[in-house]
Image 1: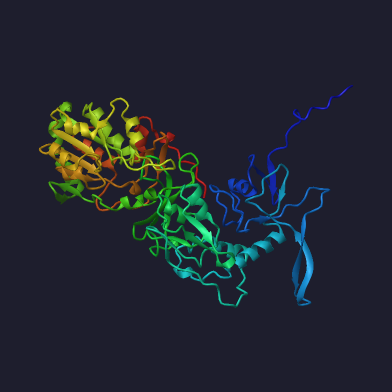
Image 2: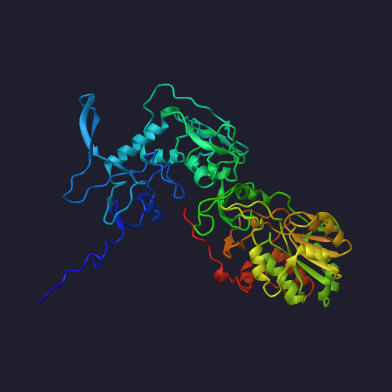
Length: 546
């Protein structure tokens, strides 16, 4: 019986698997060891490597041992080693370790990380070197509690400093620009900030000067660190060298809790974490949450500072004729104001808001179209702003696409059309406070109209309203948002609602019920189940990695 040998093209290819400390790890073509490990949820200690930046391989913390295949000699290095018995250095040799951030994976490769004594010794030495001149100012450092120097000292060193000489002193509290302060003594020259500014922000404003232990990061002469991603430049710093003026000395991270949110800065809908102090109900910062389909690892400055809108300029109390009233009294006043609208759908204008969640807009749209029979809807929000080709969208509203998808049967018109409309609207029910039209024109157009506003913030619409119902902010409710890609995303509640604020959809339900309509939703689950195009089962969390 004859047999034929398969050609090279027909032979099965080896699986894309490496062994890391005996564990099989899959990898994709072109993956480095550290990227494959990162994808598998395994931490190989590192400082300079970042999955979204080019490889620098300068911190050497990710060194691993690569045992050679059988029959092939190992690559070894001659070294001098301290002999405690003879009290002198003696000749020795050890395997040549490789940086995991730079070494490409190959099928069948064996990698030793935590299981190698040589790697353990090398990482302890790297840690000791990085800490030789590092100031012991953890008690006042903003990075304390989430600093890799602290974490890796506990994991890979746990020894005291052997150097007794005076440390090298460098500039402290250097003003890099409007948002960032630099402490050169804490800097380990990982160059993450340099690479981020050049590769992601497209503004190579940072560089390294001097050599050896005199290295420090500098801003280009005549420039400031003032591009649109300065806070992200600080965020990629693994130690406390770069600090944000917005967060500096304001909170300790171990007192903070995090909620998975959606950025409110524009229609990109970046995935984020909102860090807040539950003891004081205070938000302290917004930081990116990884999502390869939306924002990768990044956020812009506008987005990272958008957490302030959760508390600034809020409509905290119900108003009737400008006077503060309990919410139930305000709902009753709104009912009296709008009761004449029943059966007069042509006299009612419904204003939706791209600044409010899908749930809030659905509730008002349903009240108007299903129960009041309104066919003309309007939409408003913040005016257009600056955009770039990285993340920033010109549309500064987080839910424009959501409102348009919600109102496919009755496409909403711009608020300017309401101002210029020849129709004699007598009643206006408006969601939100931000408008993209001239304030004076809007106030003039609404003068004499019976206006009810359900809003999170104060603005021209609330100032023109006879009744204002205070809606909870995006950070105070579980909510749904649709970004410019049409991707539906969920945002978690973080804060307790300020003042008398309640979820917008709940206030609209109360208003409809007061008018004798069957707007009986009381729970978020009921609203999501009824939402056309966004039932509860379709609201998916984006992929999140720690």
